[in-house]
Image 1 (cartoon, rainbow, N blue to C red):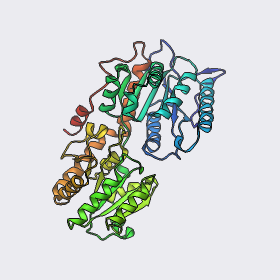
Image 2: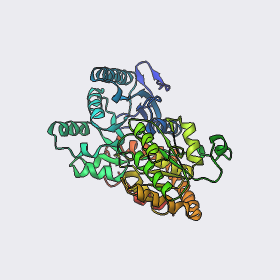
Image 3: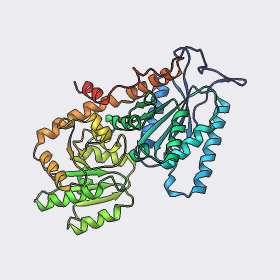
Image 4: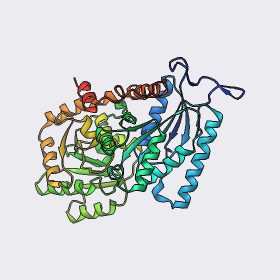
Length: 412
């Protein structure tokens, strides 16, 4: 999938940094392990924006496929895919000299095995290795299993920076005793221009013009709260509050959610369109009344929340990880609790009764989203890369700005 070619002269790569070079004197060259576009979820939609903007800022990026739907294959097939990934990454390194190798991954047991094998097998060319985690399992970080703990220690000893998406995740690593100087907070990219309200949306969707549309979007797995969203809709129906809930996505809990809607007698008020492509999801974000996302899943920067922010959609969610870092109540959201459909219904009613609050929240969310522009986020990655390739490495005093401070600055 590589689509960039570094100029070469014989066997010598031109335009990359080597020991002793001034990091500002030559274009930086990055080998980017990027998720395949066929893999569903926020990271595969975010990374192309990052790569494009890095190139716009003068970074030479070479892409290699990294990651797959590991849950759908057996261990033998998984091992074969890991070996294929290692061959391709090493082949890329044989053709070019890179300053940075960035692997976009997650922090779970399956990815840990893959990442450790791949990082251990990379050619040692003096490049700095960056892991960007799009999510992390708190239980794995704090594990007392000596074998898993050894694997984590080995992986982190081989990389120069590990990017996480929330202060909570960083604190989890630090409290578990891992090297704090390597754990940095990074962001995902948001593009508010991609979310445009459409006056014809309701008519095309068979929705009456005045009924509130609640949006829930996620992979339907335990922890994402789809059943809580359906039950909150049932609670609202019992209170005489008329809404439509659109649950976009699929997964193992979809059938249970559909059955719960029927059991509560709200089957006509809850829609399950299944997995939708990004273009259709952007239409939902731009035209819904508000987002309901009662998640309790370990994800650093839930893209459903931040895509809603970019669209100017009022948000009701749980105070977790990236949401807790960047959102403020009532400026950007209302907080709810997991496993509490009645509380979620209360928050929905509070927002529906206050058009002024919805309007101010929408405006504040669009303002907040500007701090996650492609230019800003890619610039922060470039700054991280340059600190890593300088002779003194990462400066602990510079390595992190508290997200809460960033959020406050953005909203001043």
